[in-house]
Length: 120
Image (cartoon, rainbow, N blue to C red; front, side, top):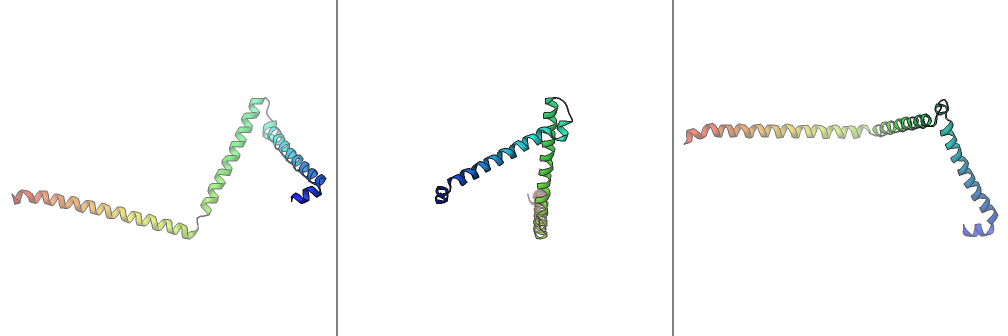
């Protein structure tokens, strides 16, 4: 690369200026579109333009984030959803088991309390 630059310095400078110029044009086009977009140019006053531009940017970002959520949800394959369902069912089974053990413990405690007066 360095050798090519040394052999063709004018081409390299021209290419660099083309890149800088194209970035500058793209930036200006972006700024002009934001300033003169149809939703903004219909209104009068600087504050209204800023508010409308901010609302438009907010709505665009909201749509983009909603689309990202939809994309993430679509990545869930059937095997992944099946795995999630299995985890949910095993968690539910553990909760039922713990509840039944709690009831059994309470029942045994109640029986011990009822039997204790007879023993003494």
